[in-house]
Length: 523
Image (cartoon, rainbow, N blue to C red):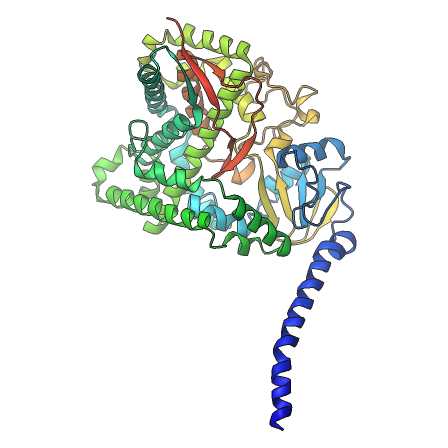
């Protein structure tokens, strides 16, 4: 009897292992072959023809993911929705029509949410603040924070934007003088853009000066730089392999204990601790001192809506989103101006005519001074259109619904891409992919760029989840661009180079940080 039991005991482990392997193989066959080909309820949607198990529909290794999305929108007839597959055969639906966008972002916004895996990954960078909150919690938080982003209050912040923009220009000029003495130097724009925007959100958003422009080694800047490190080839390969094996378990993949993941967690904890200290410092101030302040942190504190931990989350959100995306936008603007020297010269002429020579640019500047520069506003709007700092975002359906005439099951993942919508010829005309600030100049064009729908410009999204800081970001970007263009002539280190984008933190920035030859403009 014991011999028989021993036999089955020894047989148990191999059988279990075989059963597990069999289940995994069957699961992969289901996910890789049966589901996308025969079983998906979305099979009626138009789909790119070429698909591989490993790369999904991304079969062109030389094309960027964004350019592939743009290609599919242009080449595949569709009624507003295109089904496609990510590496590992993960099913997605690209939204291409303003009608479907209106449903997802406005009329049925409560029926869609950010996927949990996305929220988990972003939470290390942004905290669980306004960007990641959902439903009633999001409504309450947005209502409490709105006074800090009111039109009137943002206009009062322009002097802060301008002072920091001029300080950035001063630092660049000082470096040029110290390092070369010839008035010319190759500058990595990302370095200065990140430091300037971090100081601006610190002062205007939190009432605290990080001093990043003067001290590039300060703690919070160093931690954000650690977060933005590119993954190693091994980490990229490992994540890609596991995404292929476990295509619908990306939350598990995002929690892999890789070296980069460990660094991100450590950096997040350091930033959270710093934000916690700022919250406590704010709470120690008496009511009279807080009364005249209207930065984000003070508004959130006075609202009484947030616990201390939630206040820290809001600070992390606006620190990360507030400096990262505007830094990316400034880099893209400099890149575009270098690619279009005629635009740069015209912009410089406008800035110097209205604001004075580089020597006199240190005078006080108001919101009306900056907002009144028509060509500056057009250049910034065109950059934000053609190079959106956050080129894609994702939504997940919470219920079965109809969209674009198609039945959509619960759990469907949608790709909403400003980088696709913002260059759609049906909305922007045949020159939609050309950098042309003129499209924003003329009667009724300052806010629309001459587009055929208010959903055509999707950089800040639309509806109840639109960017609360859009006016803040526009004003900040305009001041930074005016300070640089008014003082420097800029040329790419390699004029023939076409910039690639890379994922950095919350958004996407130029891969090399935009390496530019700066030359002081003659007085």
